[in-house]
Length: 220
Image (cartoon, rainbow, N blue to C red; front, side):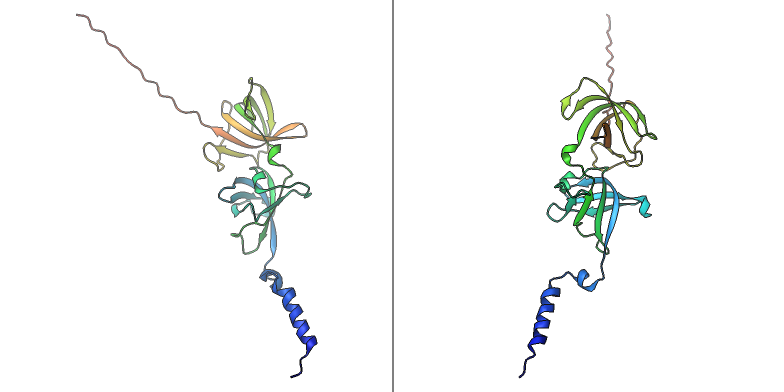
């Protein structure tokens, strides 16, 4: 039997080149879409995050995605910092690479703002003044980064349309109207000399019950 070695070589080469390619790449059916949005909450332990999709893309909805430390790559726009899902914070702007038709699968790539976990600071205290439209807040600090403060007044700025507000002990954002006198914890970063708040956690003061004891004295 005469063997066509050239034809056999061509077949073997095709098998090696195309056999290891993923189905969506070889068939050209599935594509990757970039989904921009703002992180609403992220839970590394259960491997889930929720983002509010940018309204510029015509959606503005909130959606949850799966992430893991080993399969999800996190990078900043210039790809100069080593980031992981542990560096993701509520309020950050991100862009997710999502395979069309596989939105329930683990996200393999996230482009996040170039902020690492070490960039974030925490301040706790009472709100003295807040302007929800201008995005300004004055806090009477009682603690910063775990260190007791002497009630210093500090100014913060925030994005009125993007600030993420929690109500302790919940880890998911809620629709709350903050007001002077509220006890809060602010997660922020320093940007251009200003304190930019990314998330605010409201601590509800426990209700106190007053008990009145009446003593009756009788005389005989």
